[in-house]
Length: 353
Image (cartoon, rainbow, N blue to C red; front, side):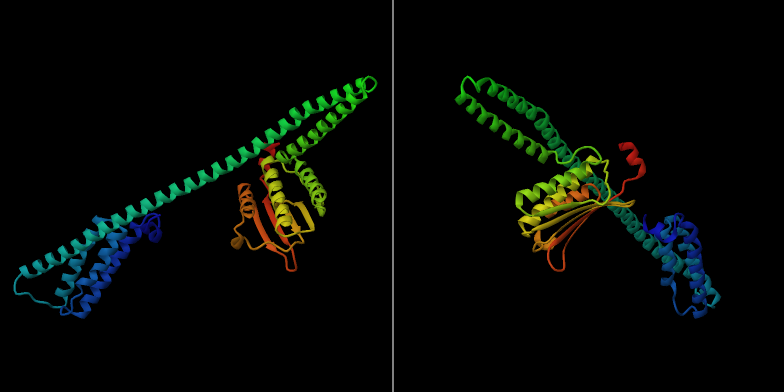
C-alpha cells in the first residue's frame, strides 16, 4: 500500500479533489481580505502539491490554473490597478510557470517514491519467500535425517538382530551336540554364543537410539518410559516419567522431536547441572501438548549467555514442529525446560489417521 492509499483510501481522487478545491477557496479568501499589497501566491503551492502528490499531473495542472485564477481574482477584487493589461497576464504566466515547475518536480519525486516503495515491497516479498523456503528445506532435512535414522534402526533390529538371534540359536544347538562328544569345544561354543547374545543386546540398544519412538500414537509415552529407565540405570540417579492421562500423538515427526528435546535436556541436566533427580512430565489438553523436564541440579546459565549447542538444538527442534520452547532456572536450584506443542486441527488428525 502506497502513501496515497494509506491516507485517502483506495480511491484517493474522490477525497483529494474536494480538499484541493477547498484549500484554493480558503487561501483565495484570505488573499482577498489581506489586500493586494501582501502576496499569497506562495501559499497556493499547498493545494498544488497536494493535488500532484496524492492525485496526478492533470489534477495538479487544473489546480495550478485555478490557483492563478483565484490569486488574480482576489487582487482585482481588492482593487489593484495595473498600468497595462499585459501586466496581469505576465504575472499570471510567471506564477503559473512557477507552479508547473514545482508540479513537475513533485511528480518526479512521487514517481521515484512509488518506484522505491514497489522495489521495497518486491524485495520484502522475495526475502519472505526465501525465508519460508529455507525454513521448509531445513525442516525437510531434519525430517529426512530422522527418517534415515529410523530406517537404519529398523534394519538393525529386524535384519541384523534376526541374523544374530539365528546364529545364537544355531550355537545353542551345536552346544547340545558337542556336550557329550567334546566338552571343551562345547565350552568354547558357549563363549561364542555369549558374545553373540551380547551383540544382540548392543544391536537392540543401537536400534533403540536410532528409533527411540514407535510410530504408533502411544509410542512417545513408551519412549519416555524407556528413557527414564535407561537414565536411572546408567547414571545411578532417579529419573521418573509422569503422564496423568494417555497422550496420543499421531504425528511421528512431532513425537520424535519431543523425545530428542527431552533426551537433550536430560543430558544437559546430568552433564552441566549434576542433577540427581529428573522428572519428565507429559500432559495434553484441548489446546496443546506440554512436555516439562525438571531437575534438581545447579541450573543452566540463561540461553543468551550460554550459547550452548544443545540449547540451540532444542529450541530449533521446537520451532520445526511449531512448538513454544522455554527454559528457566528454578528459584532454589535446578532447571525447568518446557515445550508447548499447540493442538493440530481436527481435520489434520483425520488425515493423519
